[in-house]
Image (cartoon, rainbow, N blue to C red; front, side):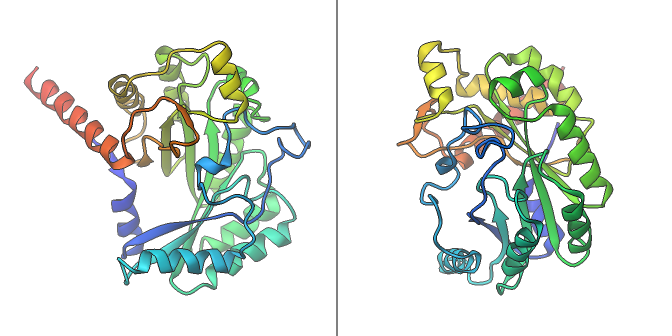
Length: 299
C-alpha cells in the first residue's frame, strides 16, 4: 500500500513549489450565529488552526503579503495558495465572498485558492462562479466531513447530515472542481470497527484530496468539558498509526493525502499529548507502512 502526498502532487499540478497562507476573512458559521445552531462544533476552537488569528483586522491582501514576507526569507522563488480557512468561507453574501476571493488572486505570486467550508453552505450561485474560476486558476474546495455517522454529527453539534456532505461534494466534483475533505478520527462513540465501516462509505465520495487527523481535546471547548466529566480512551501514537493505515487501505489509491495528524498549540491542547511535530509523525507512519509492506512481501 502506498499513498500520494500533497506536496509532491501540488508541485506536479502547478510546476512550482507552493506554500499555503492561512487567511481569516471574517466569516462565521451557521451553527454559531443561530441559523442552524449556537456555539459551533463541540470540538472547535479556531485558534488551533492559527494561534495568532483571533479576529483579524487585516485585509486579505495584508494577510497574504505578511505571509509572503515570512516565507520569502527562506524561499524567494516560492509561489502561494490563498487558504481561506477560518470558519465557513462560503457563508454570507455571495458578492462579498467573490470579492474576497478575487482580492486574493490579485496579490502577486498567488497562484490559486483553497477554500474551506461546510457541506450545507454551498449555494448554486457560488458553484457557478467556482466552475468559471476553476478554468482560470488552481482551486480546491475543502469540505469539513468530520464523520459519516449522523448520530456523531448530532452529538458534536455539526448542524448537517452526512447526506448533506454527499450532495455537496458530488455537486462540486460534477463541475470539474477539485474537492478536498477533512475527517476527524476518534470522535466520541467511533471505535475502530465503526471507522472502518465509515471508510468504505467515504471511499465512494468523488474526492481529490483528504486530510485526516486525530481527535484533539482542546481547552475551552464543550468537548473538553464532556471529556473531563466522562473521559473516553484516546489512542496512543502506535494505535493511531494502525488506525490510519487501516482506514486509508479502504480508500481509492488515486486520492491525495494532505496530512494524517494535527498539532495544536501546547497551551490549548489537553489530550492526547504525543509531543510530535507533524513531519515527525509522518516519518513514523511511513516506517510502519514500510514494515507492513515488507511483511506482506515475505508472507
